[in-house]
Every structure is written in structure tokens, then in C-alpha cells.
Image 1 (cartoon, one colour):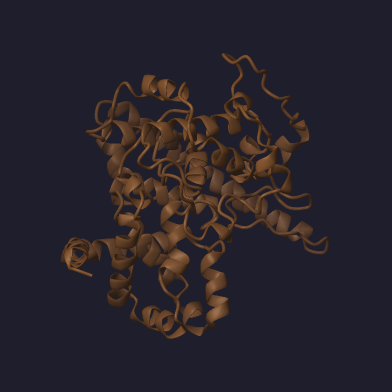
Image 2 (cartoon, rainbow, N blue to C red):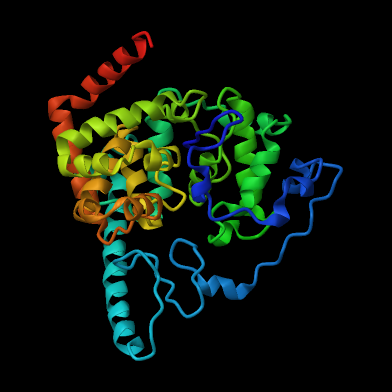
Length: 399
């Protein structure tokens, strides 16, 4: 599992609501029980776990395809064109309802067709899954939902030279150790993906798994520890995997003390913006908007925690797991180019609000096409490697 964190420090821009909203007064420091871990364990402790709030069965009929709860009076459709659920007025209910039904039927048929294609490929290429990798490395169409867990698992484990086959035992060993980060993790659990049915119940299975992974990792990599941006990343992974620990792609460098990879990412993004989106760069510079003021949340959370619609996030991660860390640069640049006309026309307040809110992505294919084109151009010139060398040289210069 891709995990990231920072020992004892919180994510930059933590006030932006990472994890799903303001902290409830009910979860103040004074209300935290002394033995925090006992609340998240079902056995093996003297103290019994607190009663779990029952899940209303009606809620299961009010979730979209990804498990997010939809407000009453809204359609449970997570992959509508605009990526948002919207209230349907009675005067337009019939027409829009028919349009939605036809659209969903087409999407379901397309998803089923691609799923069958992946099933054939998986049967033929069970050893190395070369054809599966080619399928979305060449066309970047995204992975069918029913195959995402298997494909991600392959990319994380089989293609990682540093993957430890004993990671399961290490994970369980780490759970037996008390972590200095437990109080902060416990505070963040209730506000992480609270709109998802898996994490809605206090001390329910989803929240327990989330706590255990975050606690285990804080012990496993005590140099990194924990920061708020980790919670949404782990929660997203837990919707596809059990509570197992994976560590890959040098994501840790984003949040270790000093934030080395984060500041390098700011530098590279700014330089790439100068080259590939000069109008956006000039507009942001004129308004005095620095990259860290909005991009910190993008990188630390790997575009989770409400940076983009959930369906878009999954498409981004499909390619991230294949391409590696550099893909994050091109996604940042693609988001800016996707909204270029709006960013150029907006004033400071509207631009800051836009960049720090959920980005409105109405067309995933268009966004990813922009990112792919930028990535291809950059690879042809080797610009990213050059910028990394330039940044490294700057860091060695005396202050």
C-alpha cells in the first residue's frame, strides 16, 4: 500500500479540511481514552471495544458505485459527467431521469465489455501480466473497477524489487507496539472519508482497519511517523485491499522532516508550468499565488482528500502505480491547463478558492489526455531529470 507521513508534524495546508471537514467538538483531546488502541481492536485486549453504532440498512440504497453516501433527493451516481451529484427539480425529473438511465446503461455496457477483455488477458498472461500492463500503459483507459484491486496489487508487489514477502507478519508485529502517534491518528479517523459507508461508523470495521494501518506504519517507519495527509491515502487503498502494509515509490520523501520531495516537486512544477503553460504561470505570478499555497495538499494526499472527484482519483492512481512519482508533476500541470481559461480570468480570491477546493473535472479523458501529452513531451526532452539535477545543485549551494 502506498503510504506517506511525517513524524509528529501535520500536512501543510491542514486547515483546508483534509480528510473531510472540521473536527467535531466531541472529539477533543480531553475525550480521548487512555488506551486508544483498545477502541479499535476486537480481541486480544482486556478492555472491551466500545459499542459500534449500527448501520441503517437503508443507507446501502443511498450509495454510489464507489460506496459514497448520496444526500436524500439526489441520484446515487458517482460517475456522472460533472462528477457531482445534483438535486433534480420535479419539472425536469422525468427527462433527466431518462437521460441518466440511458447514459448509465451505456457506461455499464462499456464497463462490462472492458471487464471481459481484461478477464481474457489475465487468463492468457497469468505469469507476468504483460498484456494487462500494456492495456493501460499504452491507452491509459483506466482499469475496470472489478479488476482494479488485482491490477494495483500486481503493480505494487510483483513489479517492486524491494517488496518484502514477510510484510504481513511485520504488519502484525508493528500493531503490538504502542505508537506515539495514536492520539493524532484517533483524532483524524472520524473525519477521514466520512461520506464513505465503509468509514462512517465510529469504531466500525473500516475505521478499525484505518487506525491499525496508520499505527503500524508509524511504528514501521518511525522516521516518517504520521501526518494527516496519510489518512485519506490509506482509506482509499482500504476500499480495495485488506489492512496490509506496502511501501513503494519513495512517497515517504514527501513528508519526512524537511519535506525534501515536496519542495522538489514545487520547483519542478513551477519550471514545467513556465515551459508548457506560460499563460497560467504568468497569471499566478501576477496574482502572487505561490505553488505551495495550493499544491501541498495535491502532493501530500496524492490527489485524494477531495482534490478531485473520486472517479478521477482512481484513474490518476491507475497510472501513478505504473509510471511512478513523476506522474504527479504532470497531473498538477494538467489540472492547471484544464482550467487555464478560468485561471487566467479569475482574481486572487477566486483563484485561491478554486485551487484549494475540489477541482471541477467534467471530462476525465480530456484531463488525462493533457497529462499524457505533457508526460510524453517531457520524456522526449528529458526535462524532468534535468530539473532534478538543477534542484539538487541548488540545495548544495551555501545559503
